Length: 330
Image (cartoon, rainbow, N blue to C red; front, side, top):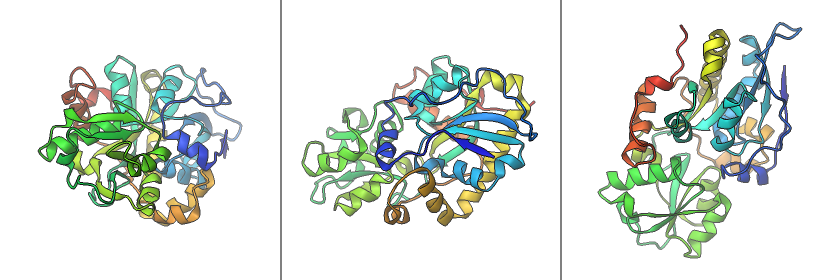
């Protein structure tokens, strides 16, 4: 069984990647401990985003994977990003949440008691065709990441996976990423801003990568691959309190996501199909979008790479062991 609080339109998908606004307040509170229903399943709530990266979660619902692990899911897909999900989980309004890894790491660095329980998405490792990319005008003199030094680059939000991965890519190519002027700009506005010369380049994610390419813009490279070919993009997490009080439940969710991730990785056509059930991204665009890697596990080494990248750029004050924020069943 599954219950969802909303299925949103493409316009809302656009808004969802801005990481700026909150949900619509329709989610039911889960401040009390998860309980077992009459069907023998444990009721839990999960806050996700209506984007490509959460397709395995929706496939898990469609395939009955969560039920097989004893879970009855209520999910909220009105969430606009980690800035909303993280407070929702720390307050107990949701049992589990989805977030890009830099936002979660920043929260933990600031003392929030959160723990990673499952992988969501990672770079697919292709510098010429990843799920995110840096786009430039077709006639731009920017021909390599190093050329972005001293230029203006649009990102949807600052101090997140966009600007940090772009800086790391420019630094790795011999440029000075600290000289980039990052401009906050909504993803749907980025292609025109680049074409009109309002910014020199933009970082966008799917489906906006496909939209930009179809508009004639040049895909410079994947900043994810430039930062690390196996860069972790996003994860599922819970509160340390729930992990301590009910590790069996957290393990059940982790196991279900492990299975759902593997299923998604092996069935890309079903990933594209299920995206049509929780977004209204055009079918033709869904057929073209580049998918991330849906690894079934996330390792401490992968998270450590992101922690160190954030510390090096001053997004977090110092590095810390990734193991400190990884769930491990006792």
